Length: 231
Image (cartoon, rainbow, N blue to C red):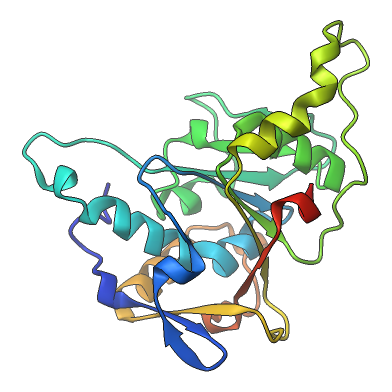
């Protein structure tokens, strides 16, 4: 909870079409109960790309009057699905971690039970995302979405085939993240010194062989897509 009391809403600027807009316009109807899932085939790359947006939502979580009361203790329901070759989709246990776990914890994606692993393929990552039942899904723009979701072959309950309907009921937003050239409908989250420092400190917690060569957070863009189109 080290970001509580450290960040301020003024530390973040939401920019669309060269104009400063509100967080509500990018993240409509946000609530402190939102389950935000970042899909990260490369957890180090995604850390730099999405860290600023996650900190903005974390700031909102701790700016609530309830979070200022004595004895308050809670973390936002933020999750990351990290790509790991040859891995079945699953959550880490309380005593488990991955080389990138400490870095994500620095952004208050904590504890390690908020870290999932899956093979870095669209189908495996999507299965892990379904497992976490997000209300907001942050998906890589350059990662294809599988044409369909196939339930486990040994599933005996026919209702398993309707899992997409359940996700559609709970999912309120899909954002595509990218670090490439911005598109006309994309957004950027500009960071002041404090959140930029937190992202940099998180990146430094990654093992040297995992760090990205370009850690410039200003290159990150986000684009909302219709849930039905994504699903």
